[in-house]
Length: 338
Image 1: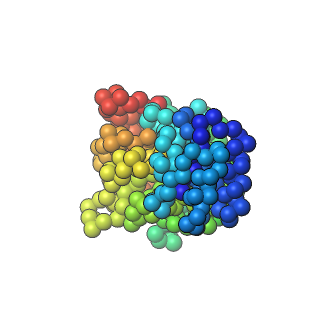
Image 2 (image 1 turned 60 degrees about the vertical axis):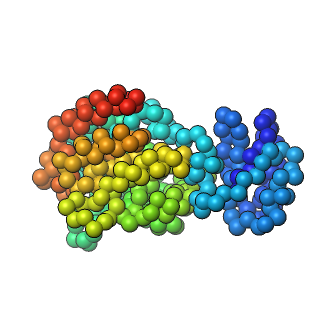
Image 3 (image 1 turned 60 degrees about the horizontal axis):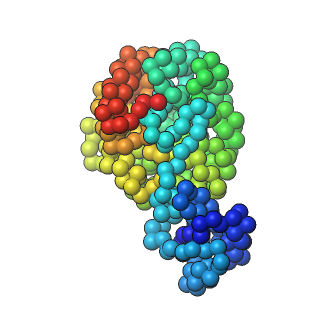
């Protein structure tokens, strides 16, 4: 349910409505737009609530929401969410590129990559300190040592850092080092983890689960938004289908769908979406043409020797080529690589 306030409503008017919602055992989330102020009512609403709220002086209209996801919907917030990370704005019209290795292996590997991706035009450095692995015998990251290396690379290059958190107990640790916290596909429906990252009030990137519908994905986003954290972006990283030639099937259609039904920025991950380095650039360009707000790309100094995901990682030269092609395409579709 959405409560639309009258134009010119004061902070006290907003608080009066929030207090009434709270008295009814529900939660209210405020969205202040250019044209209107909206309060999203979250919880199990009862039949008389609409009439009760409509009688309040500050209220202009009460709109029932049929969608199960509320805070992430365009009805709740018609304007696109923008997220500020250092000097980078995500969702503001420019194409933001996050790049770096799948996993932080050592300081030399990460610093070398950070310098190269920055020189090519990347805006944010990616790198995993905690790595989910299908096999327990695969490399699973350096943990806090990897976070310290990421922080060192940020200090040298000035690039903000995005890295993944895997368990609720590690949220505070990762938040101390990361500028953006990533929730991976395997944890999309780890609801306790989602609530914990929501409490950090740091920018969050929520990846789509391997077999998740768009509705399930947006409902997972609600867990983070319901904690009051509005700095949330989504990431399409391919879904599991019957096709085995590629690692996943990159769902390009999800990008315009998200732009239609949600105000959250949408990032594309063609590295995980394909699993093959030579498909990364074509799918990155397709994602930009479809309306993605940014890209997250895996880059490694020597993909053949990478401890994780070498087959989908770009060399420095290939990444520079991707940036050149994405820039040329962006100008044709009235977008700008940041």
